Structure formats: structure tokens, C-alpha cells
Image (cartoon, rainbow, N blue to C red; front, side, top):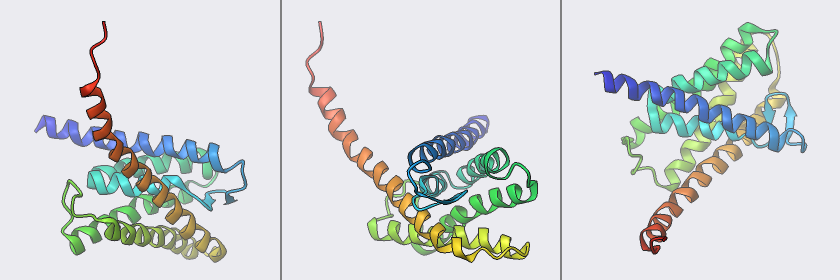
Length: 191
């Protein structure tokens, strides 16, 4: 029981840290180069990919980690003067990938190892997430009386491209692990 709680806590903290690291990298890489449409909307948004990846890998624990990290970025960076928007933005940011995770369970019988997610299914889930996330954010804004539909398509595109970059970067890194392990195994011992 205790080791399960520790594992869940590690997945929550790991998801939050991964998201925050990718968020900082995205800000550094893209905001000074004209990839920012408006504050919080980028033409390529790498944290979107981390949201989906952590939730697919860690389920509810990943979503909780994303929720915490999203609240941190919303409260301290995006909307420090609007606590309600920060609160709702964090919920939308965590709910969208979790809804796509539940969709994957329903449609594909998603397994914890993700072995049954082929490229076509992963592409579909990336697209579903890239629509769900902006839809939830914009639904909240519309309920508040703010009409900001011009940013909807930018968010869809930015989330989709960011998700593809993150997922395929991870896929590429995982492809190199067996080759690296073989190389280390065959390396002569050093004196």
C-alpha cells in the first residue's frame, strides 16, 4: 500500500516537473523567435505534448501532476492578476489530456505499457487532444463573456505541432536506447 502511494506521488511530481521543464524550454525556444501568437498561445506549444504524454503514461497521477504544474504556470506567469482564470485554465489543461486518455481506454483498450498505441492511433489521439484542449479553454472564456475565437485555431495548431514534436522526440530517444545499451555492453573495459 505504501509503495503504491509513493509510486503515485512520484508520478504526480515527475509529471509536474517534466511539464514545467518543457514549459521553460518552450518559452526560451519560441517566445523570442516570433512563435508566440499571444501570451499563452504559441504556433508550436511543446508543453501540450508533455501533458498528453504524462497522462497517457501515468493516467490520473499524470493528470494531477499536470494540474498542479498548470496552476503554477497560470498563477505565477500567465494570469497572476486573475485567480479565477488561472484556476479554470489549470483545470482545462489537465482535463483535456485526461479525457483523451479515457477515450483511448474506451476505443483502443489502452494498456499501461502503451504497446497497443501504433502511429495511427497516436496521431488520432494527438489530434483529439489538440482540439479538446483549446475547446475547453475557449468554452470557459465564452462562459465568462470573452469572445476570443481567433486564438482557437492557433491553439489547435500549436498544441498539435507541439504534441507531435514531443511524442516523436520521445519515440526517437527510445529507439536509441537499445543501440546505446548494445554499445555499452560491447565496449571494452577501461583500465
